[in-house]
Length: 608
Ligand SMILES: Nc1nc2c(ncn2[C@@H]2O[C@H](COP(=O)(O)OP(=O)(O)OP(=O)(O)O)[C@@H](O)[C@H]2O)c(=O)[nH]1
Ligand SMILES: [Mg+2]
Image (cartoon, rainbow, N blue to C red; front, side):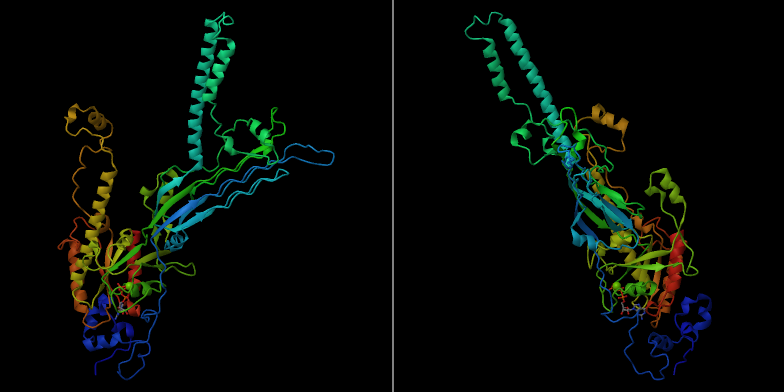
């Protein structure tokens, strides 16, 4: 019978404890390693070796023991900001005061819609189901000078890493301003025509001083002519007329004869941000960002008291509010992205590291949607697991106050880990579950390559994974370059002519050569893929509890040492990629062994 060790830890994974590695190998016979695999709590005290179904634990759960992730990384929403409430037309009535002064209250302002990126949200599924977001309308004003209540604001909370793009907007305020400008211009033209007509009539009268004697042109005919012309060219309507509310008891003639006063421009507390909105919420937003401003409330009739209108029977309507169609796309901003072949043990590792209940199964493509888990470093209940500090990149902010914030490191109490579906060869060509999920690790701070030590050559597996990731990165960079080329303006329309004689080209060259593209877009630069290959990475060599995995691990470790020294190229083949601290951490995720080292190593890389 094979020798058995009493301490579980020392028997497992000799390479978890490198200093003791050589000393311990002599007791680690293959049979012993094989036994250790089956060492589940129920077996620890059993004296027989009868094969039993391993008892399911949190790290080795049954296929049905999982929380289905509700995940969506895209959502399209229509936002309706709240309209303003109407102003009120009312007059004070009291004993012995039948016709008191006007006392209609103002309408309340409509609610705004904001967006805020927060830690703790990991998916857009709730918003994807919602489709519409409406802020409340302001309440109408009431008699006795009671103003209407303000409409309630809505804050859309999204995960950090969400990108917002505006698709379209309907802005009644902007439309109205445009209509007003057109009406103002039309009125100006009409006034000019009227002046011309008057001048013409006066000239005719002057030219015919003895018009009374003339049968054809009398002052009466001149007046009639002018009237006919005026009928053909009526005064344009006041574009502000539909902004007014008139007392419903007023007669039609009264309404027709009201000359509404000029509406003054009103100061806005919330200005609608200009179109098109494009936000990249790659860090938490301490204060919500305004997306759609509510309409301002109407004014009650006391605002319009004047000598001409001592008892105004009109008030203004509340402003209609903007509506926006937006698209949200989530590029998960997990700190660590787990990349591995299907069935490598990524989800088990996520369970071991965090409280996640990701689905685990001994078949490929168990995970169909990304799972996010949070590793708590400091719960403020005792000593932190490890002290860590987060610094935000200063490139994100522009204002000086924010730059100041960037320089003060924030105490990191947790970090997030993203487990995505497994990659297969050709994933960058959309094979398997494809590249749809690679964009979630694209933005991770650290990449952890999860490699199953029991599934053949670990070095080959690592190279295959890096190849896919590298090709994906290069593809993304190409896409970005093409998009940038398409979006830039080609100022040099005369491609056949001599450029030196072309005034446009000269102008462009002097003023801003970087902004302009001459003729065809330039040939793409050398493809790099560095935006992913430049990230810190390490290898998690898992399933180390299985027999005959030590050799594989040793070969992997030797290969990574060579990569670190520069003797071997980076596994992706990309030049200048990150090779500072390449290492492999052996773990047995199913037993939770070695996972603490992953936490420490990750924190080291994140803090760097
Ligand atoms: N012996 C052993 N088995 C493990 C270990 N980690 C995972 N497994 C088993 O490997 C199988 C696959 O694990 P998963 O965590 O579902 O693998 P995955 O990489 O998430 O797979 P996909 O989601 O399909 O990509 C399961 O049967 C696990 O129990 C380990 O450390 N040791
Ligand atoms: Mg999985």
